[in-house]
Image (cartoon, rainbow, N blue to C red; front, side):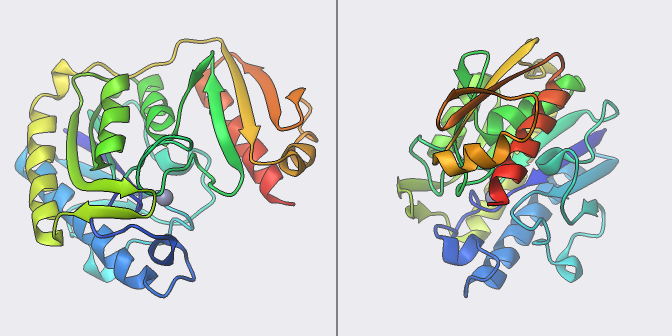
Length: 271
Ligand SMILES: [Zn+2]
């Protein structure tokens, strides 16, 4: 059994603020330790459930968060950015299950540190009329390779967002959001124990969880936080302007749609 884990940071227990998640934050290095420990707990669970290969993709910010000398020896780790599939780099149809660890709800919803790919640039991503954040889009990338996303770990709103997409998915709720920058957390040891146990139960039932797919062709509407970002991104010839802050484009396959989303965000971020 091959297991793919995308490891983000905002949904890790004990992390509630950009001081922890931001590269230059005073608390960032301590937050990286918490993230690494939750990843190690997931690896332990996967091994206990019978995984023979485990690939972790560091998927937060710089994507250089996991601390190499503290990592579990029985997995492999993709660290660094940029990567074509970003938070899902490394996924392919040889995997049996995907775990989204430390994930968070989408921009505009409740949930600790909620955002969609770039909290500084993106207000909303709508695909075929439905709003999606990182959980939905990352699960749909796995779905294009026919791999089910079996577990999401994070706050209660991240769990609810995942269950809305995949009702039979497992969730590990390691903190209760009180507002965007405050949460009631499990202690790290408890959070890690919960993640290990939920990884085992999610992998045991993986065959009963359908891969999550968004059916194509795709019409994507990307709304930016202000019109300056749209102005910078409209150099990409595929876009049509819906209004000052929103672009629309079409794509036939989901990976192409995702690559356009990433391209538009990168161009917008260049301002
Ligand atoms: Zn993140």
